[in-house]
Image (cartoon, rainbow, N blue to C red; front, side, top):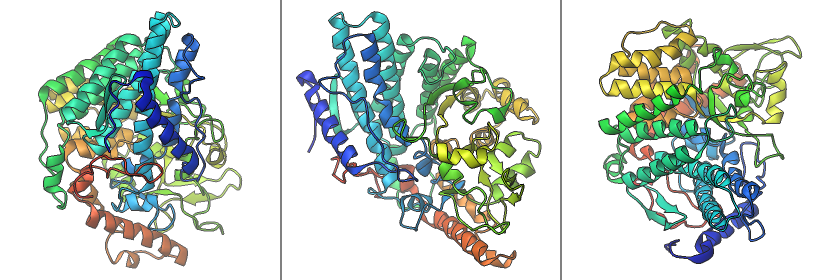
Length: 557
C-alpha cells in the first residue's frame, strides 16, 4: 500500500511512519556482530516539542540514533561485496557470510538494518525540520538556532539519501513538504534532492571549528563534491541493471562532464577555506586518542560520535569485528578462533608491497605481525597461519590498545576526511582529461605516504590511490559501482593464493589452519562464481519487523 505524506497537518503520516517503525525497532531489537541491542532515545513525541534553540538542536540530534548502529554495519555490505574482505561471522547462512559470498537477499539482516535506519533517519529529519520551522515562525527559536538545527537536519538527510541511492539506486524521495515513502524516483530526482539539501546546509551551517562531530559548511561542501563525483559517473538506472542482472558482464563506463566540474568546484571550496589539512602522520588518523581531531590537525571533516556500548545507540564495533580474538590465531599454544571479518588473502598485502614498498600506509592498513604486550609473544598474520589483519579496525593510539579496545567500541567513525576531498578533485580532473592539473592534489597524498610523485596521474593510478589511501574505510563497493568494474574487480580473487583448488598442496597446514583456509578458499570461489550484474544494486529489504515495505524490488532479486 502506498503511503503519501503530502498535505497532512501535524506531520501525521510521518508521525505514523516513525511510530510504527520505531515500535518495530524496539520490539525486534537491532543486532551487530556482537548481538547488542540498540536503545533508541530522543525520538519525536508530543512532549518533546521545540520551545527554544536548545530543544530544536536536541530534536535534530535524535536522528543520530539511526546512524550510530550502522558504523560497522556498512562494512558488511561495502567491503564484503568486494575482493578485499571475507566474513567468518558464524555459519555460511549468517548475514556476514551471505554478503561475503554474494548471496544476500531481501531478508539479509545488514541490508534490512541499513536500509530501514537510513529511511527512518530521513523521516525523522523531516519531522524535525517541520517542527523547527514552525517554532521559528512562532518566535520560539532564534535565526541562529534555526540555522544550526535545520542545517544539520538537511545535511544528515542528504547523507542518508546519498548512501541509499548509492546502494539501492532509485529510492523514494520524501521531505517535510511531502512525497511518497514507497514510490521510487528517477536518479536525477534523487540526486537533485541531495544537492538541494546540501546547498541549504552549506548556507545555514557555520564554518568548521575543529570539531568534526558537528556538521559544518565545509562538511556540506565536501559532501557536495562527493555527490557530484558519484552523479557525474552516471549511476546505473534500474533498466541498465536489469539488462546485465544475470550476467557477469560489467557495463560501459560513462560520465557527465558538467557534474564532474561541480565536484571540482566544491572540492576547491573546502581547500580554499583554509580550515582543513592533511594530518602529517597517516597512522595517527584512527583511535580514541586521535579521533575527532584531538590532534588538532583538521583532517577529520565529519565523524559519527561513539561513546561505547550502553552509552550511545551502539558502540562502533569495527574493532570487535576486525579484532575479536587478537592473539588466538593458532600460534604459541593458543586456540584458533576467527574474527567476524577477515582480509581476503595474503595477496592484498603482497601486491601493495610489491608496487609501493615504501608506502607508509601499508603498515597501518595490513598487520602481518604483532607482539602481544601481555606475553611478549610474536604473532604472525600470514599464511599458513592466518591472513593479514585489517589494521584500520584496531585502535593503536594508546598502550596495549590491541587487548583493550575490543571491549570498548568507542572509536568515532570517520565519514569524511580531507584526503577524500583532494582525491575527488584529482579524479574529476583526470576524468576531464586535465591530468597535469590533477597532480597537485594527488601528490599531496603520495608525499605524505612517502612514495614517488607523478607529473600527470592516470585514471588507473587514481583508482589504485583510492585503495592505498582508503582500503577498509567503506569505499570499496561504492567505487566499483562508479567505475563500472564490480565484476572484474571481484574476479581478481582468481589470482589469490588460496583460490585454486590445489591451494592446500602449496604449504604445510595444521588441522586448524587447514580449516581456516578452507573457508577462505570457499569464499573466494563463491565471490568469483556468484557476483553478477544484479549486484550493482542491493536487494530492497523487508522492514525491521519482516514487513513488506511496499517498495518495488531491484532487478534480479
